[in-house]
Length: 154
Image (tube, rainbow, N blue to C red; front, side, top):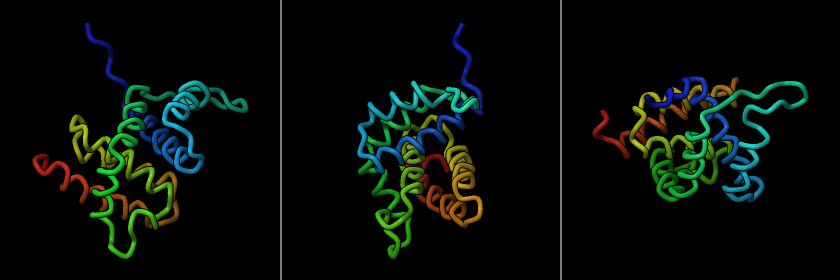
């Protein structure tokens, strides 16, 4: 009997936490090991100030963070190619950079359909930027990245 597949909400939470972890790594200079340990031990599913943080698919979380770091140059190149030349990756909001890196890592794995990856990360963009147009930017950039990295999926 194979283990049950993590729920959709656990996978969505893993993606959200991965964006937060990648942002934290860039902002603080922490290593991938330190950030993973912090999230897995103290954030994911923890009780903070009486509020329980949501559970997450730890395998997906770890894979996204590790792969985003390991493949960062390739992911950043795909992202830069998809962005307007006047707004290179280094010029955009660091939360969006973290989001593009996590999404890029998942797109490169090829086990999640590109449309699912795009939709999930657009929802994350809406959570971080509820009033802005960033979700439209995320949709366009990730669509471009998916076509560049996985043309066979379309």
